[in-house]
Length: 425
Image 1 (tube, rainbow, N blue to C red):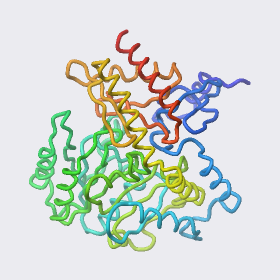
Image 2 (spheres, helix red, strand yellow):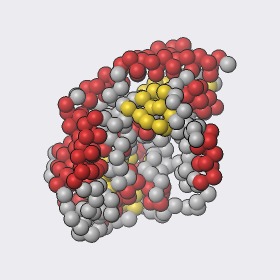
Image 3 (tube, rainbow, N blue to C red):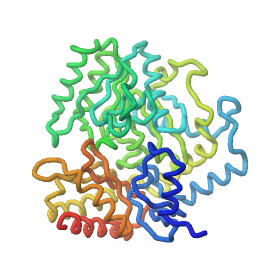
Image 4 (cartoon, one colour):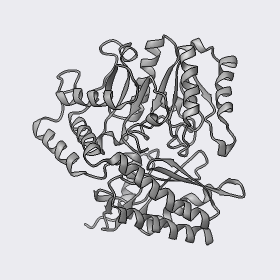
């Protein structure tokens, strides 16, 4: 029986809980680097990368070979029962790659949400405090404690009632939407005045570049002020680099561009090239605040995922993908800035490295009404895009760093023709 996207969508609707979303109504048959083929044989250029998971592309040969070799040896023991060298090797690599001139230790998990929740656990154990400050429009995951940190109700926690207590919301600096760095710092001071004393706060968590929130980047000056505030009050600074990490922003971690280091860094997504791996790396004395048995998980640091991660790190070194990230970012920004000059609805082009987005506005207000049309029109022309943002009015590009220039240019040409159709229809 021939498979079709419509047929699989009907099966999906009957079998899969509606809470599991799906942006594009197509089903993948196979994929390679930055190209995806659906079950009907149609080819697409992938500018989504599994939501920033495929910085090294679909099935990079070195990642594929590393996982195949590991599968020939063993697939699982649970590191907490029987250890294996690759887990240690990944921790050693991350201790070196995560910024900060201090001794570090790492723990591995499976998802970004797990990394975030374990970072908070460590901060609470280290400080003996319970409160956490997160930021408006921040995204930190869909599990219960992570949802409390995520700064957007719909769709992530809509209809679920109030999330965990002891989380306080500060303003993320965004000049485009009227929030200055001074405003953001003052919002933290208001928390200290109205809600919780600094001695009640275990951690402040933020994304160096907000992901789902719209690709707004914190500045080095803001990070410096935040670092000083944390130091003054004994608060742990957590950098959530789940989306920004593994080279997307032109450095292996975005915090390398911020002039200061976090006490704990979370990572996931592209670190293992499509295999489920996450973790936290932090100051050794902070990380060791939790005793044996307090961190872990049955599949945490899976042998297959660890093999993939080691291959990803090797690929970054051998193929100079950090340089490539900045080159790709410049190519994207240059082309999209040119389109901005043609299409007034594009109010901003921004991003670090190859983490690039455009923001859509109309009459000075967010224009989310164009986002779905752009995604659908681009898809009809063979390009997969994603939207994001507090208002749903941001189009983001997360193309694999390994994509050939000609394919990136072809994707950008589709974006241009898509904008021409959507904005003039």
